[in-house]
Length: 309
Image (cartoon, rainbow, N blue to C red; front, side, top):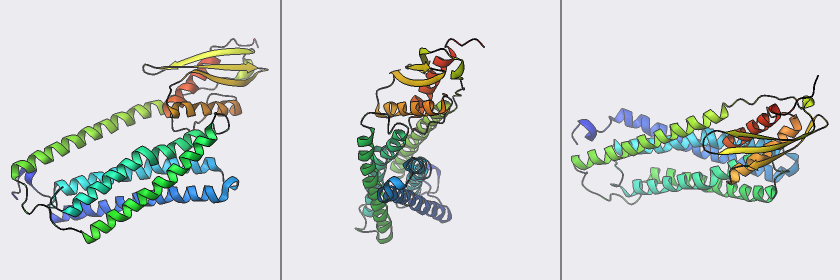
């Protein structure tokens, strides 16, 4: 193949580096999934003797940091190796099988494993204060256990396919120079678009996480029910805060988004009651809703009538 422009393959040394990174990412994905599975198993066997809150935070952190980024790395190295090596995307049956396996791994992770683990962490704030939270938590627990096992199984199959390279060639001839250029341009553009979308979403999420929530002392607030609102974007969150005897005795969501994660975010109200302050750390994965609900609580209290000193 001509060694010019987008038709050039990477030199063997560079391909070996990509292969090494690819294997590392496979190991990290399987290791992180195994860590989640081990944590879930420990929760199941030890039951009430284990702090499920700590386990939920550990699992959510694991899948949203190590697991997710290793999965991105696995996809990126797979694309790089197929684009810039003689293996290609479809020339070998085992390469096609690996892409099918990787697609299944991504699908199961994005639609079942990560949402299940995040859902468990989201429910941790309101496990004893949200209706049907316990039943939903149990369903998510089973889902996370099953999907972690599936991801590990797929990872083992991908490794075996890479080792044994079954079924041989599908295409005897290498693609034409023009087809190589078109394929690489399309894949690179799609990859760039996906990276841009990921960066934009991460930036938005970071903006919500950086919202500052200030303490408002309830000891200086008259008894009553106070409504607070907070908005960032098109939706406005509303809460009612009840103060009695210089103590916050109740917080209720008046207007909240309708998705399950947003509803789970209302569990953060229990932390407000325990701390007697809106300035609490929400462990829920519904970062946007939890932050905006806390801001609405702050606004309700800061707009309340103060007792004269």
